[in-house]
Length: 221
Image (cartoon, rainbow, N blue to C red):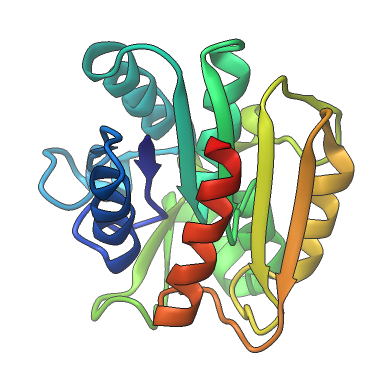
């Protein structure tokens, strides 16, 4: 099992640690790691982009795992999980997206104020307040522009693995409509989206984690 974290999150988060404990208690190996510029990894966060972090995930899977994998992607990790599943057809046995956020860089650009867009184009970076960190989040022109080479939602996403998607109806960061667009885009034989009332983007209460466990049980069959 491979846990793929979100934008500016790290492998010590509640969901990452819970998934590892859940997997190991059932005899499964589990890999969690920090992308470059995240958590304990080297590199500057503002220098990274989706392609860099996806390549980090590719290298981690190739170097540190064997056999078939279940990918668990949270928020941005859901986007990276989808890119990995297309990169490794036949090796990914299942994919669980938790508040998956494919194409979120484009959503950031669309939601940016005129002043923020001007700063990104003029200075290469703008800073957005974040409720998840004390410091504002740098939004760079490279993050936006490079992200456009990995957009998924406006085309067919062909996957040959089981796919389960969880999305909270109270998610203010990645709207539930993203989950609906994603399930419409995925072409596969066993794909399901569960919308959960009253759950926000964190998806980390005891009830939420129990639901993640039930979805994993089904993916593992």
